[in-house]
Amino acid sequence: QVQLVESGGGLVQAGGSLRLSCAASGRTFSSDAMGWFRQAPGKEREFVATISWNGVATGYADSVKGRFTISRDNQKNTVYLQMNSLKPEDTAVYYCNVGRTYPVTVATAFGSWGQGTQVTVSS
Image 1 (spheres, helix red, strand yellow):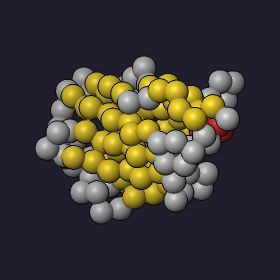
Image 2 (tube, helix red, strand yellow; image 1 turned 30 degrees about the vertical axis):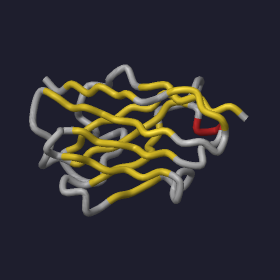
Image 3 (cartoon, helix red, strand yellow; image 1 turned 90 degrees about the horizontal axis):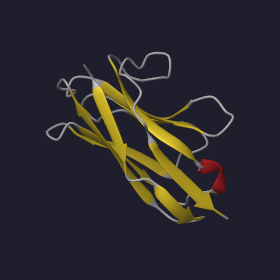
Image 4 (cartoon, helix red, strand yellow; image 1 turned 90 degrees about the vertical axis):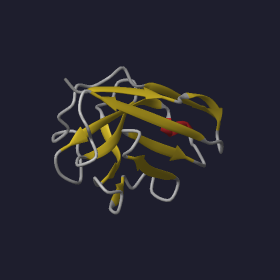
C-alpha cells in the first residue's frame, strides 16, 4: 500500500521561504511521476507542481510559477517543494501524491492522500 508522509510546513511571514518534503513508502517510486497539491479552507484541492520520474520535466500552477521549485531524490524515495516569496494566499494544507504518468493531477494521482502539512503565511 502506498504511503505518503508530508513534512516541513509551518508559520512564516509573507516573503519568507519553506521547504516541504514528502517521503513515500510501500513501493519504489523511481519510475513514477509525483506532484504537490494544496487545499485551503473551504476550497477544493488544487494542483501546485509536478515532476517526471527522472526529474527532467517539471510543471507548475500559474499562481506559483517562478516562486516554487519541485525536485526529487529517487534514492531516498522523496520529493521536495522549495517555496520562496510566500504570499498569504499560499496558506493551505499541502499534500503530495504519485501518478503513473507525467503530469500528475488531482484526477490521476493514485496514492492515498496523507495528512498533509500545514503552511500558514502571515501578512
